[in-house]
Image 1: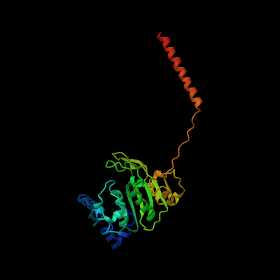
Image 2 (image 1 turned 90 degrees about the vertical axis):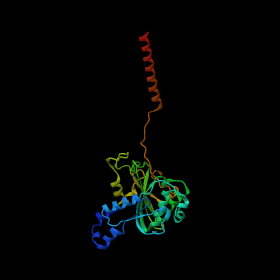
Image 3 (image 1 turned 180 degrees about the vertical axis):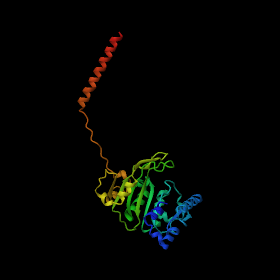
Image 4 (image 1 turned 45 degrees about the vertical axis):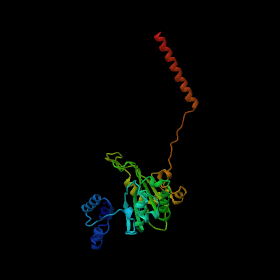
Amino acid sequence: MAASEYIRDTHTDALLDAKQRNHFHNSMFHGYDFDSTMLRIGSMNMLQHGIESPDIRYRDSLSEGASEDAERYTLILANPPFAGSLDYEATSKDLQRTVKTKKTELLFLALFLKLLKPGGRAAVIVPDGVLFGSSKAHKTLRQLIVDDQKLDAVVKLPSGVFRPYAGVSTAILFFTKTNSGGTDNVWFYDVQADGLSLDDKRNPVDANDLPDVLARWRNLAAEADRPRTAQSFLVPKADIVAQGYDLSLNRYKEIEYDEVEHRPPLDIIADIEKLDAEITQGIADLKAMLS
């Protein structure tokens, strides 16, 4: 819905053209699910937001793979299931050829790489485990995105953004399909607030980093000079490769510690001895009063 609203707000003139308007209403937006209830809800939601004929279809994407729609899409926005596993037999063979795993969060990333056209872009919400998981499948997929495609950004989200439904820590991966590499400097941003409380109530609050995320993303040239102690910074591909393709922000973020000046130990001991003497004298005085 946000994508359609963005187009309406920023490309109003394009929708005046009959061909573009027909594309917008009939062939621009696509969605899949194997839950018939969610399909109905999704279709109705699109209709209520002005999309006349959205392509919302029944499909088990991980079982069927990308054979029908390979390299069809220019943009994928996805929030796939955070956790789960499938039997190898129930998973599309073309996805298993990309990454041998049962984990759905990895299989969906493999699927999106196949669905994108060369030059197509994706923004995918993933659980933190995808960023630093040590299994062969985790490392293979991260290496595939970094080396063979173009990883643009990793935006770390605060725990609680999906409450009350899930408390898992997540991040957004932004990447471009190139099939020829292209990763240079990867942008990292540590989102600490999203405009809502991070408890189960999710009430509106003043703190909100999301406008700043967008502003900095639009001016990445200015990010080159930011230190890694900042809320956002760039990391060269070479550093990521050296860290075994770990994409967790904390792997690269530097923390500044305030220097604390401690009193000399002998001064502290002298104060303790003074207090001890006062306590001893106080007890002696109390005994004298009671005798």
